[in-house]
Length: 101
Image 1 (cartoon, rainbow, N blue to C red):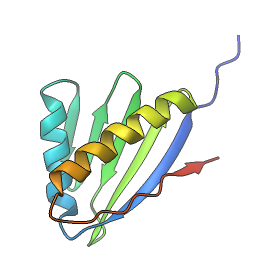
Image 2 (cartoon, rainbow, N blue to C red):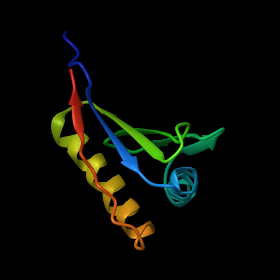
Image 3 (tube, one colour):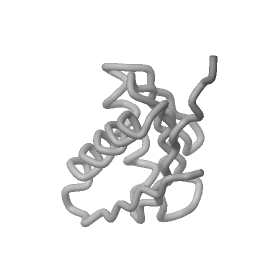
Image 4 (cartoon, rainbow, N blue to C red):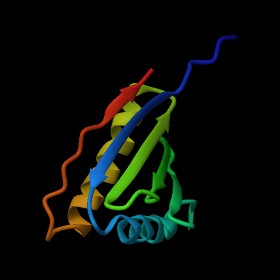
């Protein structure tokens, strides 16, 4: 039996509020699913995949999505992006999800 390799994508979102948005995302989703954060890093576990967040670099929120298929990866990308846009309504965030091979 062969296991499909995971589908991974990354985005670096420019914002001066990276750590705040990381915490806000993890707290928000923590009511519904497993979500943890500490030391400018966070992880949210969705049914469709996992989102790892990193706010270690000033002015950048890095998001890495890992899922078992492209459809699932796209779902998690969309969930994270929609919520960040809603949380950052005073900013014009730019997203470019880059698939990793």
